[in-house]
Amino acid sequence: MNFILKYQAPIAEKFGLVCYGCCEGLHLGIDNILKVMPNIRRVSVSPWADQELMAATLGNKYVFSRKPNPSQIAVQFNEKAVREDIKTTLNTAGKLPLEIIMKDLHTIQNDLTRITRWVNIAREELTKFKRKGQSLRDCPFFLQLTTMKINVIILKIHLRGENYAKNSTFSRC
Image 1 (spheres, rainbow, N blue to C red):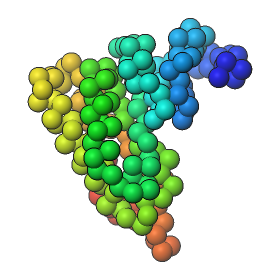
Image 2 (image 1 turned 90 degrees about the horizontal axis):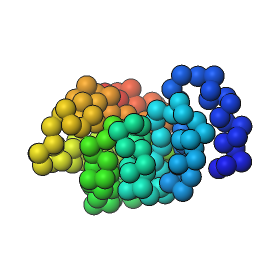
Image 3 (image 1 turned 180 degrees about the vertical axis):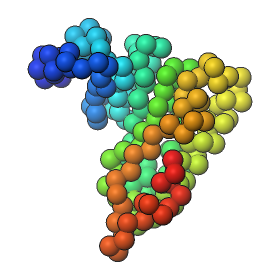
Image 4 (image 1 turned 90 degrees about the vertical axis):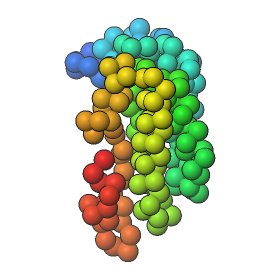
């Protein structure tokens, strides 16, 4: 990470606010990254990152950009794992600027309901979390959800040569 950072920092300086990270666990080097690149606004929190450490480090200054593990949807839909992962994220970073982005779905085993079910579970857990005394003003993520800025990134899905993404319910998210 430190090797590439010395090349990325001068490039990032040429822009306003930037996003940083992808699928690596940034928790071990996040302090150095934030020091070297002061214009970061959004930081990726991958399935391999320590969410508690990232939340403590990022605080309210950065967007906690959570990327759940796509295998919970792609390999075998595991509703319990999906629910627990979202609960953990909300309990750890629910009071911070937060987004949850489901990405890197290369397959859903020809089952489009997995996507809509994931979105519905996320909404259910957000509703439960909000009922625990969280106000919209205190939780920037809920403002994003209610204004439909929750990000669900889905690759174009082609089943039997047809693009189902534009006609299915998850395309509205």
